[in-house]
Image (cartoon, rainbow over all chains, first blue to last red; front, top):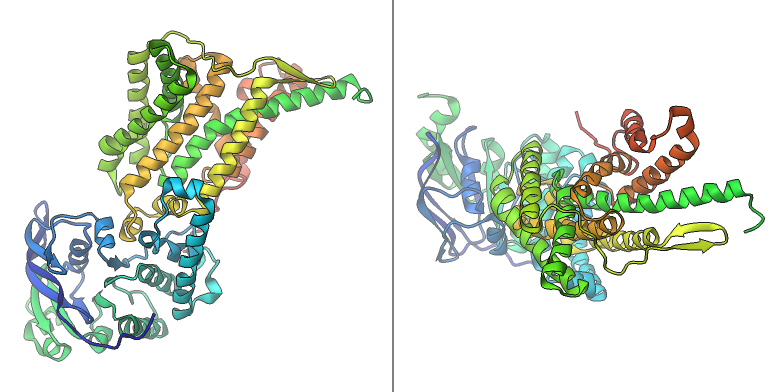
Length: 263
Length: 301
């Protein structure tokens, strides 16, 4: 976990002319954008604009009917979410999807799943080795727990935690996978001001210290503009703006979409 | 143990035979708990899987004329194939569906396995003999059925192994993760496919062991799949998500129904054994619906 400095590099993920529909409902129509290595990239838009659908396409939950996604220079065919995870894409969910019966520690440990090698047989037979591996990963997870300042709730079943902390645990689980691309679905939704500020700080720190590329979704414009390098705006499944925060703020289409003009 | 009166000796004998029968109930219940814990599905097909496993073991032994160990290995392979098919053709298509839909699907699987098993192996009552002892041992005046004793020991060993597997290993954790949230599990790189195949295989193996134990006692026949119904009160007592709960629940039901039959039976005109377990389960549902060890559901409002 050393400081890798903050630098924005080449294109990590490129989405070209993606369209996605569910029956007659068009969730995304012909959207293209890219995410560069090391940046914080935001996707904003009113509710129902297709933001989460876009994340689900990148993550492999949905498969767009048209268009291509190129990740690390390879054009991806339709892939499953666990395959996306294997390639270094981790995510959080809009409505906190934690494993409620497990402790904070166990939840974050599941994030190490792909880093752990011992299989079914070996974990049953080579008990000692599996245990040693478990301990190694445990150390990494403890570092994340320190980083997110959630030491006090390590052993608490996450179902009992307040919402803001659950979101933090979920971020921890995503970080445990040491992702190259971290997708955050409304990381600040439903939080109070203080919690929002904490979350902003963590997002910036993750990006800064681990050099993780972050793509986050929000419908609340305010916070996002402050922490993002570039912002894309979706409305009714189409792209209506893209650029650095100042550009987007000045974009007339965006202003209309947010203030309800033209609807 | 001459210092004990005949009445006490008789009580202990009934208690022990009840506990050992209970261990067999636990074995059946264990199969349910495994699948419920790992996929949130109540697997109605567990009884059918047990019957199918026992039928296959006997069938392979008879048709190929091989030693039971070889038949056992072949049956294990068969259960793995069954698990693979269940994932491939049924559950794999139902990712992210409501538990009730998955439950309905397992009812379908039950009918299929029942019919399929009897089509291949026939529906006659078969005797299962893999050389398990069938006498009884005399412990100073207390007679204990040897087969039941073996069953109890096997059940105990399986429980310890499974408990460690679930709580201490990576795959155990992945299984629990899948039970909690499919989407989140996939997003951390857990393959639902593999997990479901593993868990149905393990449940199949537990079914096989339970099938061998019950089959040795009662013969391999269709009614074997009905023993699975006895697992329901066991689960209500022990909690659907708890392996120790399944064991303790089984023991309580087993001992409870035997003791009730002997000591309360005369007041009710006998045959208490048949309904006592369900009665006990109902009392539990009224006062402790999550069972002895089940996870209490905490709902934030």
